[in-house]
Amino acid sequence: MSQRKSKNSDAAWARAFQRIVATKERLPPGEGWVTAAQLREKIKLGSRRFYAMLLHLRKTGAIEVFKGQVLRKGKCNQMVWYRLQG
Image 1 (cartoon, rainbow, N blue to C red):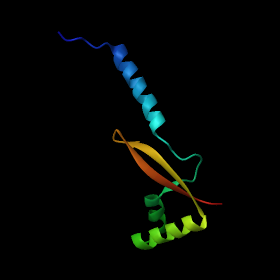
Image 2 (cartoon, rainbow, N blue to C red):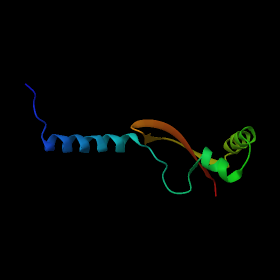
Image 3 (cartoon, rainbow, N blue to C red):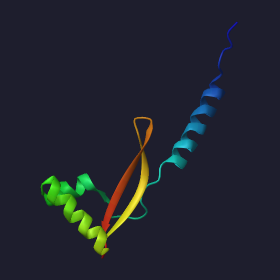
Image 4 (cartoon, helix red, strand yellow):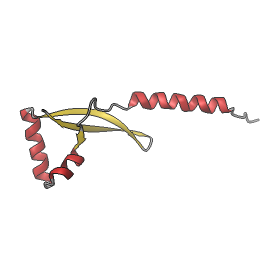
């Protein structure tokens, strides 16, 4: 014999899922953060030269780095955001 789900159990499950997602995502605080792909589009450099420049900026402390997580297609993916020191 099968049990019939109530609408309350579906709503409770959806609320629980939203809480889990909110705790799993770790986004950068504040404004001005961009991913490497977004930064590369703006600068328009080749891949090798761009990542060499990015590494140099990280070593000299000219750029801030934030390692976080974002939810995409139901999965939690790690991402890195960058922000120029001002």
